[in-house]
Length: 121
Image: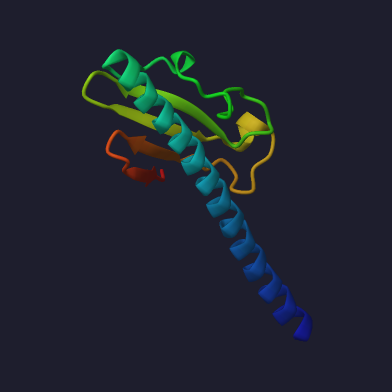
């Protein structure tokens, strides 16, 4: 009986650990989106419009590859002279070869007003 209780407690603790790790990854996505946000504002200052081409932004610190070392894909969803929408797409196990959440992908977005949102499927 003691072994069963210890096993149950360990299972609950592991689930909580996975959620905490994922929250940390989500904070990393917010940080990278903040970097893209600043790059869009600099671009706007120079061109009087925002860009939907991430290659035109100075974002060397934002990962732009699809390697297994990064948990999100970053992109500019839309942009014009009035605003922009940035997105971090959580990679799934298929994308990175491993995933503690299975195949659950979600997005974190940031708009020109500085408002973040997280969209779970």
